Image (cartoon, rainbow, N blue to C red; front, top):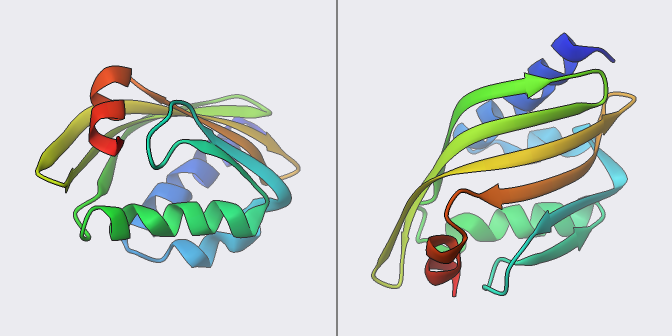
Length: 130
């Protein structure tokens, strides 16, 4: 796939989650895809496989009482990679999250193979999810 297709894929992922239809995207992740969230908070870890990734993503609204949201700002893409800049927000245990994050995607054959989450403020991210 090329740059345009990879950009469209990432935009479709964000659109589906915004519409709370994330499971409609099960077929865009490789069976052995890996999603990594650095840090030590409750949402940190390396999630291996489609089932583990969707279980992780399904925890976001549960951990935040349904307040978690991600607003896509921009996507940069190449033939095998994409980067999504977005604004993450939510409330949890009396704390508020409102910061920019980047998701780095490796895409192969039209499937997401790897995702790495990078918050712009790791300390605020850790405090929110801690």
